[in-house]
Image (cartoon, rainbow, N blue to C red; front, side, top):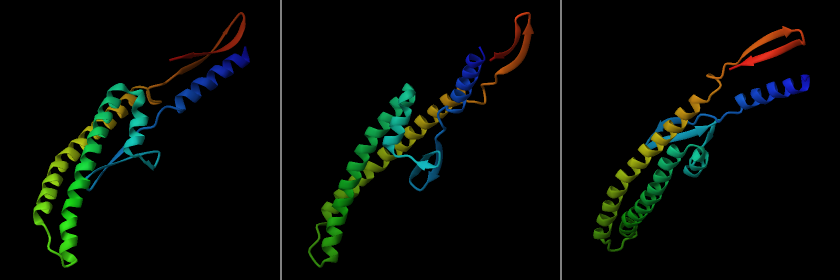
Length: 158
């Protein structure tokens, strides 16, 4: 009987302290930085972490696909801007029309990237709010020592 009670108390205590950790959000230039337990998280890490919360997972998956699109468009735009600049620096005849197209691509990528930041932040806030509902702060068991004709025991109410 003592072993059963001790095992139950140990299991409940372990579950209470092993709940998922909150993801911290820090505003940085051009977006946000996400950390958990002091470790910086990539988009892939965020997606994996949020698999347990379907709403947050759906949001972060949309953000991830938009992030991929914004990265491709931004990389292509940057390359189209950099090529004529490199040609001009090298003394060649630069095609500034290509640079203009690159500027247009970068201009398209910026709002997409902004939406990625917004959706990612919403997903993290939604994930964190779901953790608060099951966190240690709300789990407040009440222990009582009880005695009856059969002996002494420990009662836990929550």
